Structures are given as C-alpha cells and as structure tokens.
Length: 455
Image: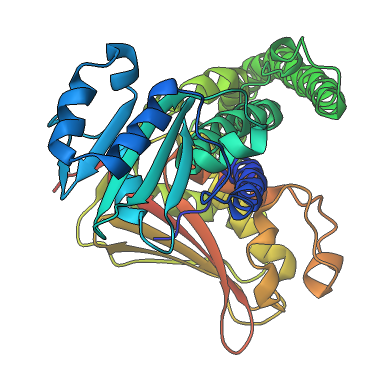
C-alpha cells in the first residue's frame, strides 16, 4: 500500500532539507579552511620553557621529580608522555588522545579548539634520538565564529538538524493548519453538517488563506440558507396538501354512499388506493428531516418484496394501454424486507418510468427479482438507445441529462434516477446501470438481506 505525504509533511521536509543543507554547506566550507598544524602559539605558561630545557638537558627521571614539585595549577595544564606513559601516570583527556595519535615527525605541532579550550601537542626530539610528546591544555581566547564551527563540526551539524527541524515543523504547521481546517470543514459540510465554518478558528490570520476561508463560509452560509428554505418549502407544501387529500377521501366516501356504489367497484378502489398513496408520500416528505438525522427511523415497514414489486408493476400498467411490464421472480420463498415502503416504491417507480420514456421496441420492459448470496437483486431492462459507457455513473446525479436520444425523448428534469439512488442508499444498498446487447439499458438495485424469510 502506498502512503502519500500530506501537505504538512511536504512543507516540513522542504524547509528542513533546505535549512539543513545551507548549514551543512557553511560548516563544510568552514571545515575545509581549518589547519590544525600551526594555528595557535603556545600559551604563555612560564613552566613550559623551563620544562622543555629540562627535557633536552636532564635525565627523564630527574625531570619527573622536578615536575612534581612545580605549581599545581601549571601541572594540571601540562602532560608529558615518554614511551607511552604520562610523566605523572595521568590519563590524557580525550582531545589530547586524538592529538597524540596524530603527532608524528611530519606533523610535530598540532592545536585544537574544543568547547572553549585550547589543546596543543608538540613532539620534542631528545639528544639521544628519542621523542617526547608534550601536551598543553588551556582555556582559549576568543575565536572567530567559523573556527568554532570548524572545531565542533559534528555538534554543529546535529544542532542544525534539530533546530532546523523544529523551525520547519512550526512553519509547516502554520502554513498547512488552516488548509487542514478548511478540508475538515468541507468534509463536515459534505456529510450533512451545514453549520460547519472555518473563520472562527482563524481569528489571528489575515492572509490569503483567511480570504479563502471567508469565501468558503460565505458560500456555506448561502447553501445552508438555500437548502433550509427548500426543506421548509417542501414541509409547508406537504403539510398544506394533507387537508385537500383528507377532504378528497371524505368526499369519496360520501359519493359511494349517495350513489350506492358497491365497495368492490374497481374504479373506486383505484381512487382510494391513489389517495392513500398521496397520503403516504406526504407523510414521507414530512418525516424526511428525521430520516436524514437517523436513517434507521425510515426503515420501519415490513415489505414482502415479491408482492410489493407486483403491485408497483400493476400501478404502472394501470396508466398504460401498451404492452405491460413483465415481472419475474426466482425466489423460492416469500421474503420480507425491513424497509421504507414509500421510499422503496418511489425508487422502483422512477426506474420503471425512466425505462418507459426511452423504450422504443415491441419487446416488453422486464423487471426481475433474484437472490444472490446475501443480497436481493432487482433489475429493470428496456430496449431503448442505451447510454455511453463513460456516462453510466452520471445518470444518477441530480439534474444530469444526456445530450442524446434517451434525453431528447424524455422531457424530464434529471431527478428520477437521483431520487432512486438516494432511496436505495438509505436502505444501505447500491444502484448501477449497464448497457444490454444488442440495445437497451439495465438498471440493477442490490439490497442487503437484513430481513426474515417466512414459509
């Protein structure tokens, strides 16, 4: 699995690498200018000259006894090594050990500056041909900055790496934080939280990102107002429709009594059924806000899926004098689905009506129901002109219309299949379209079997 760096990581690495390379280049330049062989003179310690004279003119044992009797402050700063042993059996500081390894006939004098101290190594040639190494440790004076960097290159590079990383992280967070906040706000907005805003979290900024957040909040405010207005309008219209529908049902009952129409009259039953359908649609519209907050509230009906689809086909065929829709089922047993009857009905009706708009063949429109593993599959196929392969997913978008024969014939607004998709997704299902051979379009709905089976 590939992991891509986010904006913060990219900015952090860019700053960090840039700063570190600059500091490293400066350190390398300083380091290349360092010359340890003869940069500093021997410090002004009176004991040093006398010690050199003693070593050149006296026996080493005599020098050792004499050296022990000198001023302790000076003794602490001077080390003498002969035949691998220090004159007072002391351990050399680490810096002097490094100098000791480098001292040779070709490099008889070496100096180093480390952490404010001057370390000097000198190789003396005795009259008998032997060599003595004399080391001095003393506090250094003020050195140029580039010499300090050169003498402490590793420490400088590590410090540069840490400090540049810290600065880069702060800069990266400062730049990317508002963009991440904006992304989070858009995600919240897309998931239905229309109150999500960015500006309250960016009070201290007055830059281009702040202006972008300002534009986003203005857009979000307009969208929220528009969507809220549409919801209220739908609610108001649905509420107002209840009264005339109730009066229509009451008038229908009076008509049956006054005209002595039998209760099994086919036309009267159809009118009653359509009135109930309108009433069910109104109730669904009024409950839509609650369904959006908690989709589980919408799935409260027990729908025997095979009988339900037969009823939908009968309702569609009632308004058509041409060849009826053919419904077939391969289910072995009746299946009851926990669903929303009205929303599921709207989804199937819109698919069937979409097929009727574009169907131009003597072959019938087919609606099939089958069981596949843990799903129910409902498929509607027509014999129309079909849809380009690259546009099959787009036909479920709101207000999307195809600029071809399927669209010119319909005169619709591009909402039917979008409503179907929303209703199917509320049931945790999926909807897809594919072309059939030789002509036509099939739309398949897949619903999960969160249901019971009865014999």
